[in-house]
Length: 411
Image 1: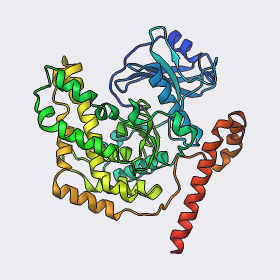
Image 2: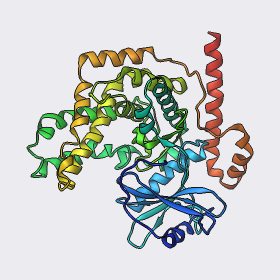
Image 3: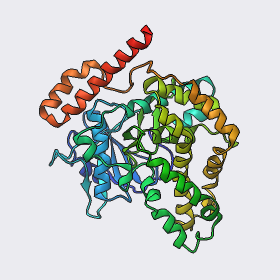
Image 4: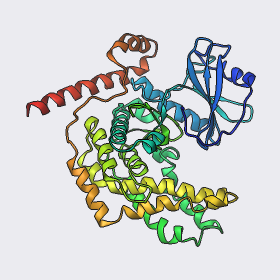
């Protein structure tokens, strides 16, 4: 399997798929095979195998503007250009190598992505917890830390979309601007709902305060790091790659770590699983240790990232899609997690796990292009000089890790 099992949005004929694939560079027709992947609310994803046997994914991005889709592609392309192999990288348009997104006649953006082989991490974890589950979460943590190790500076920092700019990271900007608060206050269905009056308003104030903390390190975020957006090796649990680009952006790195912890470390009974949390954070800190400020803000970020997802469920099923009555209370599960993260005992346990984490990296970032790819990277840089900054950053990253490791072992 290669995507979460949900619903697809469209059914396309082989001719339709082939015509769209022909617009992108590197896809050789005729196609050998195409298969619709069932996953997500925001796109139709079709895995294709071309005449040369190469696999990629045709994605029709429902509900997003061309600007949104282009911004998503820009962040993912920056990650791939820096040597990070754990992301579905967009393919360029054949007619214009500077663009990655095509607009259909109905206005819907279309892109093609590189293919990542694997199974959804949430399914593997559900079927094999214990030591294998811990290994999976350590790998996921290390993969997120690798994503966060991608340099974002200079020109890249200015041209990539940021989570405060209106999109990305589970629509956190809509909370910060008050857009969602206003929507709930003006809806006859929600303006007197206890979720709004007794819960959301106080949590949203905390969200704003935490997201505006200037001392937190920033970089490339996945933005929606639930385990169903991560593919792993079914046998080993090792992370293969990150899928679903809709929330890719630049923002506080802590957002991803805390969101993944809140999404993956609660048991079905609603209790926080400290064994899972410890495995995830140890895997992360082995690659990129959390700063003192990040540890201090960690719990507030666990709550705010859950609030983003919790509120999406509440608004979607109580305002936008009220006809799906059986989902009206879908937000309650995540709301209860947020409440649990205010409990003094839970807070104490989380702080204990944070205190145990290493303060120096013990392994280099995984999922980066191996040294054997140097010649290809240099050829790419000659063709695209703008990527030189990213390449230099990755070189400095690996060299810096080696130096820190040497100092740590000599201490």
